[in-house]
Amino acid sequence: MKKPQNQRQQRVSSEIQRVIADMLMRNDLFIKGLKAPYLMITEVQVAPDFSYTDIYVRAIPPVDTEEQLALLTEHKGAFRKKIGEKVRLRIVPEVRFRADTRFEQDQHIADILNSPRVKADIDKYKE
Image (tube, rainbow, N blue to C red):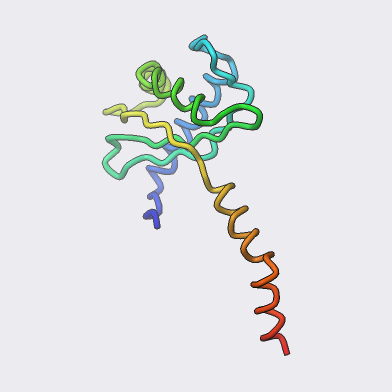
């Protein structure tokens, strides 16, 4: 379980998310193969010491998340530079792009809970 971010981390995370989303929306970097309209920045987590930031990305099908993550990671220096220009920080954190797998995890749990075996077990204890 992740430790909750403090107020300053939340504020910086929010600003970084806004900057990255704006860059993707306007296609500032012109990255060949990047399908920016199909990408969602679902969460940004800044480390307590502000040395790095994890940017969680999810691609909307039919776009492959891993392929898009590779392109984003390849250009992470340009994203870090833009963050440095737009967000007032003493030290600009290292940028790390990560796949957001929460949706798949949620679906897996829902599938388990809706399975006939679990439903039968639940019904057994309802009586």
